[in-house]
Image (cartoon, rainbow, N blue to C red; front, side, top):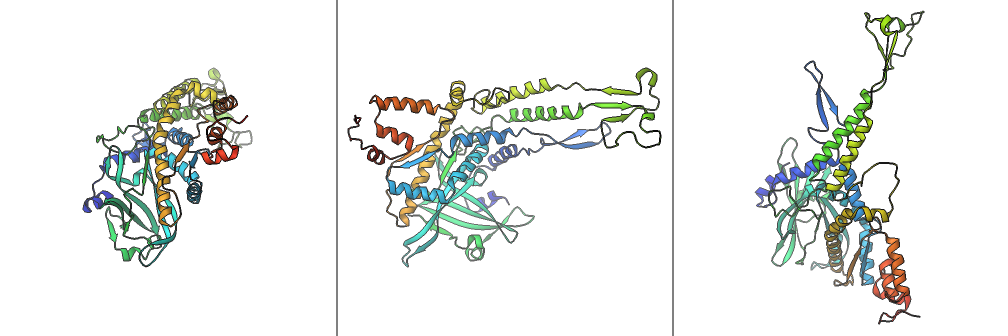
Length: 474
């Protein structure tokens, strides 16, 4: 269905649909199923065409995987100065599989440019006056194709619509969730559309109708959050959006958005490389009289494509009964072209050169990487600027919802995000340097524990019994 028609009827203004067509293009490269490219037709010379599938290196997928692993992996630590609050937040993140799904959606962010995280309450119990006394906190994860900014300022989305697709009894439904700021608080409005088969329009269900469907049984048409802070977080790559004529567009672009020509050239070269081996395989042409034995049985396996029958008027005396043909393979030329374009792709996507050079040099160490790929170091640090704010904002929302549930949490607790830069930094060398600083008194032991053990200042000082004046115990 065309969700833009629904938004127009509701008076909801969002981005132009042309931008979402670009998101679909990026996704097609990620899946290696690009319209009018992956499948193509070849003229046979007789007025007919054969449909072929182009082989792909899948580099859009590889780029997305790599940036996701560099940004959010199992070594990223979220530390809160208030221990009780930190324990509560960690439990919520664990229950929502954030370590796995967070990395998953970093990969989705890489190929689509934008994702969103929406914490919410479920299984909630309330008193007669509406006060919530118990419940759980969930997190919805949304990719770019289902995110529709409504209002934004300086690149920050303040009001937004989200789509959630569900299937019930083989019928498709779409939950439309709108987050608006009304009268000094955020209000969440929900509606459900039933997708009409063979139609671009969708039937809007009444609340009493969607209550009969299991996925929407506990869904309310309107929720007043009581907070002036949004209950969603928009996460995007830190790349200027040049895919839309509207320069204020707050959505991100794919990490390879400006390298589609290189991706296309790589797949053409790789497909040609594969065809080179297919078309250039060895062939043996034999005279007709050699195809059968003296008893009339076949001398060669008819399923073996290496043997070909020579024409009956073939000059046997001049050429012989058997003629072998070995095609010259242009392996070296293809390999060089592919490696050259892998360098171009790596450079255009921020990884520096030779990130994807395949040779026998082995795996580079972290020290080699940081000395040879300063472009990648700056690129990762640039993306971490936005991701750090996103993770902190997500934690703040979880804390606010926890307080709504009656938990004694500290909303002003200090939040520290420690990213894992061991791939682009020589962590062991840095740690050894810090040990030397501690031994000479330039760094306090509790500071060392905070940095490498993920402890709060209070925990670290208690562990080492460090005096408040940061002096080193002799």
